[in-house]
Image 1 (cartoon, one colour):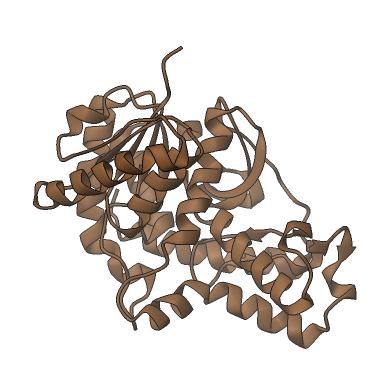
Image 2 (image 1 turned 60 degrees about the vertical axis):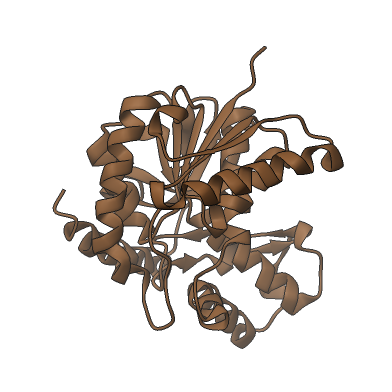
Length: 311
């Protein structure tokens, strides 16, 4: 049986970590693609990973390229191409330049890998995944944005850090846009089945919610040049793995809503069942009035950014 094929569009910080984790998990052969100016860089990274194979014991092949023909017949395409944030920038500030990049990527993925499951990581996420969808014409179940997986991971991390309990036992969910208006659902968060509201006081929980919403910016500020790369990469791999192995995991992701949560025509963070059919289902959580109001705010913000794409 032939190996699966995973193509990574963008060979920067996230792209190289994606390649590493994909190889270590032996999810399939990996192609790292970047623009011609960076072809030497991605070929070097690919060769470095190939030379690491004997040490790690994996046998998948990793190649670097600037030729889109090399992504032909990919099973999964993960897109990180674009400019990262700098201190003081919001994700929305990146829209103009990254919109041009994603339009070119979408045309090429449509041409060479029309049957791939596509995971978009580039920011501003909700608008960029929408742009890919409109330009590529992919079916809504085969195009998804990596947002809620990362946002929920950060929410879990902060709960674990505050309680001192294992991250493995933390369960929580973040809805909405991948930005400062996202909606952490504290009411539903648990640690080992125990409601987090019984473990932490309201003030601490409010600070965790705020830190979750601003988590990406916190890292951008600390790094000084660039944005997060380890956690976004692992988040995207979780999504790819669930598709490739038909795991049916429920992962918060930016999916096209067509009436779910009273949202229509927007890609926004909602709990998705990811399996061999791509996005196989969007699960609707019953929200209280405050949560509905917060989700409406984030949807309006996403709608405003999407409108700027003029697609």
